[in-house]
Length: 135
Image (cartoon, rainbow, N blue to C red):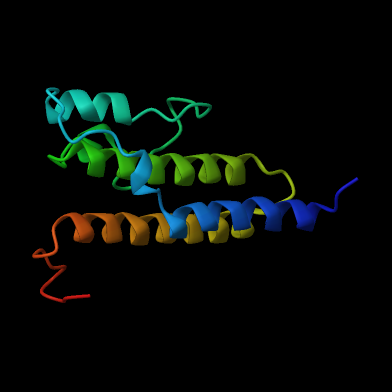
């Protein structure tokens, strides 16, 4: 039987690798999409295996995911959100973690997800800046 810590480290490392590593551009769909941002967002705001009433991470709501005009960017954001949402749900359901540990893991996951989303958005629009600061 596996040690509880080993399991936590295992899924934690997997989630971090997925967030930091991002998604391969080789699997991006074509950039042509006739759906409106709202239609794209509605389809993007669902993560398989996560209850619909589970809170979405900031930046992962339907209207936020549907805003990028390039569907490939929206799809990358969707994949990042799916990884983070799955991790957040797993943390919330983990009976071995106390509330403080759950909060710590959740903040780490959200921070990693937001960092990766920012990288994707900056790569898609390199002339944009965040509060006037260039990376």
